Length: 370
Image (cartoon, rainbow, N blue to C red; front, side, top):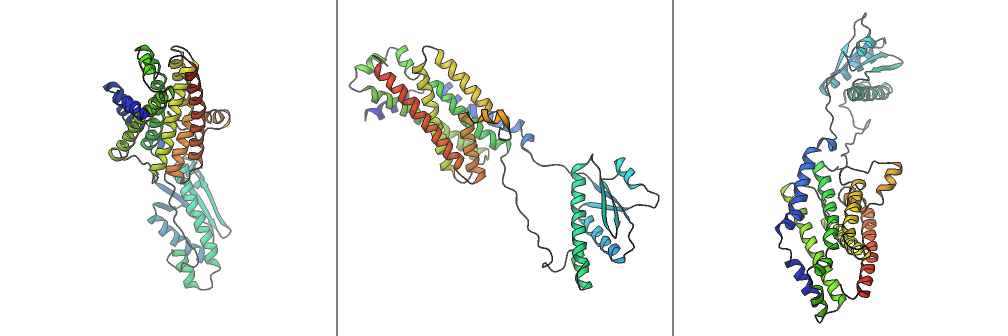
C-alpha cells in the first residue's frame, strides 16, 4: 500500500505546466514538422513523362506486321505512342537527340531496342511492353488456330494462354508515420533525465530525511517512486500515440497493444538508465552523461533519419542504440507482420533495466541516506 501511495504522490507532484507541455505537445509538434518537411524523402512515386517510341519494320511476314499493328493499338491505350520511321530517318540519332524515348527495329529474327539513357523510367516501361509483345508473339506463332492467334495478340482471348496476377506492394511508412514512431521513442529516452533527478531532488529539498524517518522501508520508497514515474510516462506516451493516431491519421498497425508493450519496456529502460547513472556518477555528471548518451543514440538509432539501409561499420554501430532496437521492433510489428525484432527489443530493454535498477537499489541500500 505504501508503494502505491508514493507512486500516486509522484503523479500528483507533476504540476509544472512546462513539464506537461514538453512531455505531450513537444513530440506532437516535432512529428508534424518533420513529417511535413521530409515528406518527399519517403515518397516513392515517380512522375512519368510522355512515352514516344520510334519503330521500323524490316520483316516481310504479314503475320508479324499484323501482330505489331494490334500491339501498337493496345499500347496507345496504355499511354505509349508508337510512331513509324521513314526510310531516311536515323532512329538511333533521333533517340540520341532526346526526341524519342526509344527506337525499335522489328524483323523476323526478333526486336532490337535502343533506349534513351536520359529517360530511364520511360525507357524501362517501353522495354517492358516490348518484351511482353515479343513473348506473346512467340506464343501466338505456335497457336494452331488463326482465330486463337488473333485473340491472343489482341489480349482478349482465352485466359488459358497467359494468366496475369496483380500484386499489391507492401505498405510502407510515410514521413509522418516514421517520425511519429521515432519521436515518441526519442522523447521516452529523455525521461531518463527526470529519473536521474528522482532522488537527488529529495536531497536538495531536504525531504529525504523525513522520508527515511517515516515507517516505510527504502525498498518501498524506491519502488513507489519508480512506479509513479513509470505511470506518468506511460500516460503521456499513450496520449501522444492516440493524438497522432486519431488527429493526424498516423498508422500504428493492427496490433497496437504489442506496440505499447515495446514502448512501456523502453520507458522502464529509460528510467533505469537515469537511476543507474545517478547512483554510479556523482553530482551533475550524471545528467551530462545521460544527455550525451541520448543524443548519440538518437543520431545512430534512426530518430533523425532512417538507418535501415546503412551497411558496414555504421550499420554495426546503429545496433548498439536502444532507439534502433525499439524503432525496428515497432516498425516490424506495424509493417512487417512479425514480432521477432519486437521480442529482441523487449528482452534487451528489460535485461538492461534489471541490471541498472539492481545496481541502483544495491547502492541506495548501502547508503545512509537516499
